[in-house]
Length: 188
Image (cartoon, rainbow, N blue to C red; front, side, top):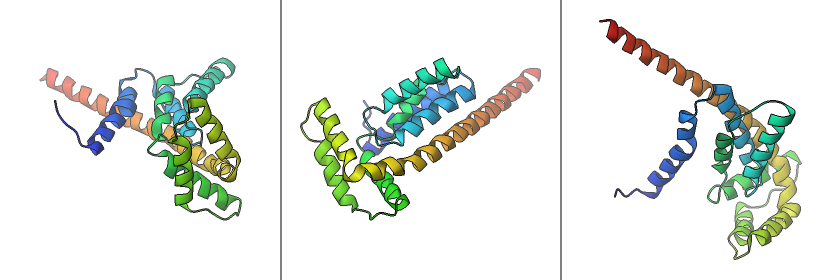
């Protein structure tokens, strides 16, 4: 069995959980791009733990009310951008952005990091973690994060849609080029 370094493991997880589903999906580019966009937008909110439920609810609402569909598996997968490893720095970016937008003073990164670790890595049950997170978000850090995540969600959600569309177009062009080359080989 081959052994991988921690960085190689992370790259493999990223590839097999985010890129491969995009490559293997038989659906049109807009369907995939909207799924990625919804997942990325929800991942750019301070709601780790319920982001996948929010993607599912978005999928249901869009499907029923707006008659629009998107790739639910891709949407769910792309919420994993914010996870246990990336959550604290991303939350701090939300917090700083929100504080700057509201013209309020910014607290040090180490303070947020210590507070988040105390909540998420404590020996609490699932519901105790939800309650502690809610309390944390409603107090000092919450308003800054709630306001600050909005530009991040908007920018990353919209840009991920266009990047996915561009990627899909380039992939289709490469596929057509390869087919052309194969066709020319057969003619010879």
